[in-house]
Image (cartoon, rainbow, N blue to C red; front, side, top):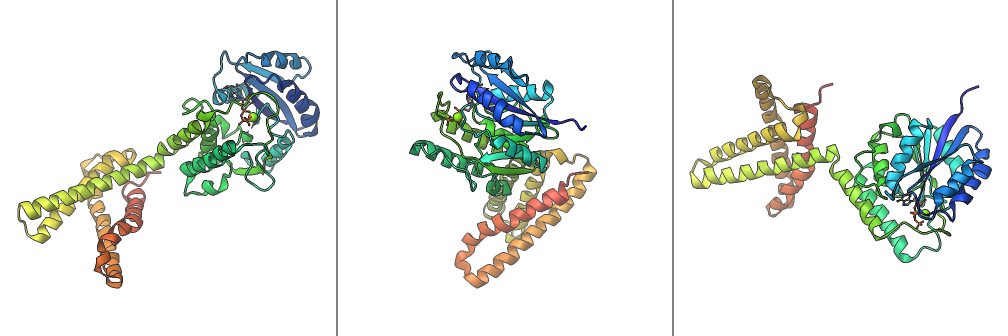
Length: 385
Ligand SMILES: Nc1nc2c(ncn2[C@@H]2O[C@H](COP(=O)(O)OP(=O)(O)OP(=O)(O)O)[C@@H](O)[C@H]2O)c(=O)[nH]1
Ligand SMILES: [Mg+2]
């Protein structure tokens, strides 16, 4: 017989004594027995809650052998609890799939078999969404909570993913209900350097899982109202989540590279403008010579800074490479010059010269920059296989 795959449901708890016993019993007596193909375990990560949550878990451990408990010495945040839980589930419990779940019955236990079915269907990362058909926010939520959840979720998703496909695909980025495949995904997560060990962890795992190219889908989540125990959501939660979103995007290698590319381009423009003024107005060179020299100096500036900074991972150092690449760079720069001249001339012919200054930034932004970006990445500083 084939060994059954193991799913570990992880519930972080802080002062959940009112609900945890009921949740444990429900999962072991009602939910897990319905799931035939999976060997289901439950792992509680408690931050030594003062209300004695852990005591209740220990009591239930006598009855349910697949119930596990990890204790943190003090309150460390939900993100930290999941990091500890994930590590424990992988190394000690040999989990194939991890499910993130709340203690307070806001996540309906019946979503667990649905999540596992999606794993069986070949998905690597499945999120419960309140925003898809069949999902919803609790009826009893006040305006403030709905506002923070909706706007925070949208802004977070915008910061992290716009304009790429995940902006449209991930409808509920701050959801707490998720299933993740371990092999190739959770086992590759960087869990040490999180920006937040509080609620921000949610979108950091999401970001990393998608960067690992996890096959992603959503299931509907009817998020219930917390009926017992106390909410751990505070005014700082939204701030914490958005801070993580911003830092993730800002430090993304692609974005970093693009920002450097833009900065170098801007420096090139400044070099061009000041030396044009110097040669033309100050030194009185012939007009064509002033343009030629200042443009070439800008090209040299662009080449140098991009080589040592933007594309430092593909940097050229030998004189031979530098020379041949510099000649090539002049070639692609000439291409940019031709694009700008041709399109600029055509457009001003149709629209009138009064639009010249308006057209220039558009041509640079939508034609010259994409062209240069493409040439730098695919030709000049092309990654070696
Ligand atoms: N171990 C641990 N668990 C935590 C911590 N903060 C929250 N949790 C648990 O994480 C889960 C989600 O927290 P909740 O307060 O229910 O957050 P929520 O469901 O988004 O908000 P509510 O609708 O107000 O319940 C619950 O099981 C909490 O007990 C923490 O600092 N440490
Ligand atoms: Mg809750």
